[in-house]
Each structure stands twice: as C-alpha cells, then as structure tokens.
Image 1 (tube, rainbow, N blue to C red):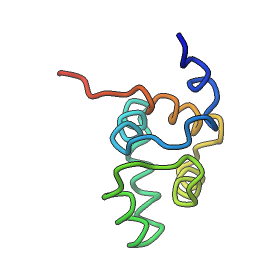
Image 2: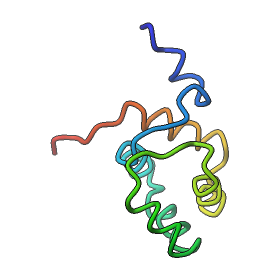
Image 3: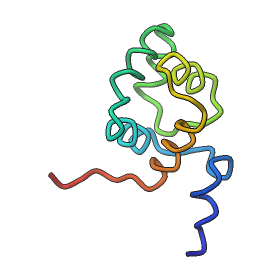
Length: 91
C-alpha cells in the first residue's frame, strides 16, 4: 500500500481526529485515565480536550495527559497510528 510508511512513523502523521484518538484510547482501555489526567490539568485543558476537532501528537496537552496517565512514548505513538485508521463500529 502506498501510504504504509505513515502508519509506521508517527512523526509522519502528527495530526489525527479527536474522534479517532478517543476511539483508539477507548479500545485500549486508556480513555478514562486520559480523561482524568486532562481534568487534572485545568479548565483550559479540559475545554481543548472536549472541543478540539483534531489533535497533534506533539501538543503539550497531549504529552502532559499521556505522562499523567502513565502512557509512554511508544504507546502514545501506537495510539496515534491506531487513531489514523479508527472508525466507529456499527454495534
């Protein structure tokens, strides 16, 4: 597939949809931990998390929330790769 490289290199896809990231986190059982971490970062962080349409992998909010939720850089990169191809299930 012509775009396989971007799935292997998270730096090649620094922006994903917030829906995709939340789906990836939910499927990995980490969404609640990240939501709690974001809440602990203050009201502006919560507004950004709740209303952003897209999210950058290198954004300070993402890095702070991941750190607070115990998500290492390899797992964060995987969540962004998963988010790039995530879509809601039809259940």
